[in-house]
Image (cartoon, rainbow over all chains, first blue to last red; front, side, top):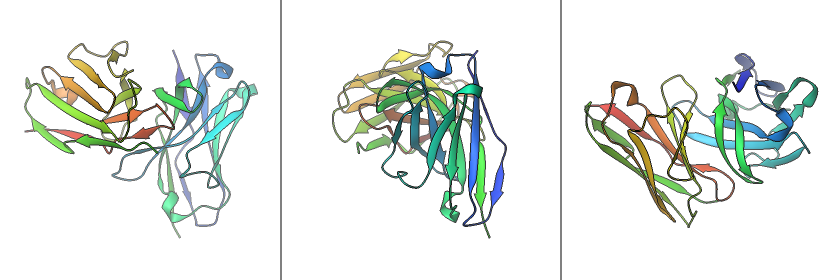
Length: 121
Length: 106
């Protein structure tokens, strides 16, 4: 069974850094895209970024390019999303999801439970 | 970016009703469309990919159709478990989602 286990809720102050994680199991980590989707409170879904662990190909949504960094550690089958300087507008639930499809064109077939990120002074 | 527009934004219906949600793309996306269901406080779940291909385990009362710029998600006979928010997502290019349709109990 494919599973995506996300790290716990975070409460941070503006300007702080953060790295959240998504540990995968049940499939070959290097053979599928893995990425992140944002959902602000009471709002819809926004695709953030995807990475292909097999060759480290990375794709960002234009809306998030330069704002976040996606990475993986193949040794532990885990994906990460990180911020160097958080803003209040980053407050949201972040879901990791496995991507299916070709480069740049994915749908998400398995989702993690979400990591809540709250940024407040 | 390809813009996705769902209608209606909110739909009130009763158990046993047949309901249809529409999703329109700002340009042709062929059949590269997925539908998701999200319940309050939960992660989205994939229902349909390639416009009409039902995911394993999804009840057959769900069906998807359309191609090009107009797509539909139909639930043939609403069950209590179906009251949720539904999102379409195109993957003809960088993924974009519709704004969601909240299906509520009448």
